[in-house]
Length: 241
Image 1: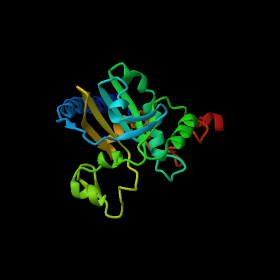
Image 2 (image 1 turned 60 degrees about the horizontal axis):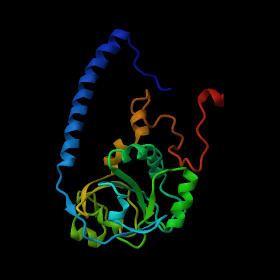
Image 3 (image 1 turned 30 degrees about the horizontal axis):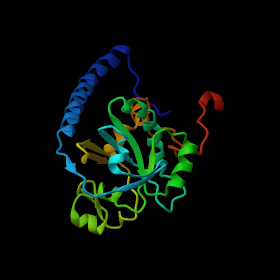
């Protein structure tokens, strides 16, 4: 372990109180941002998307499963891939436990990928995930909710609400991770929110726990994160010695 500043309990307490004030300010701002997210205008979704599910083909409205709100995790698993993105699998591990509680708040959660349903089903079983995972193969669903200007949608080179352009990446054939939110009101589906890249960071409970560990996220990772479906749980240092 790297050397670190060592102090007295009194020094620690003084520094911790200063940090607490900044943490409280961040918490208050986070609460404000949550309210601002909910105040974004809703946009009607007119495209008749269809998804392959374990219960047959469903429309976007049917994915709500009788609830009024839907959260979609865009999980990177392309048609030609043999396994999903490692980072997406890692995030999915963290999201899986929330599904039970979301349902009690009138929210349905699903993961959506472009890989065919049989690939999703096989990996879903290996991972032990409980959330529904559906295929958008053959649709522009993931593309439409990653690109937000018509020019970028046609060229496939921009994403994240027009704030990022990647000239060498054709998003029509590439995979992106993110989270999108939808509302269902009087049988009309509305898009209310999406986030990508570091915008999904706070959704991952393991990252948040590691941010509070003494050495942070990267210390001793040894190539981590890993796919839980492919790896045995990491043992403790005491057990390895």
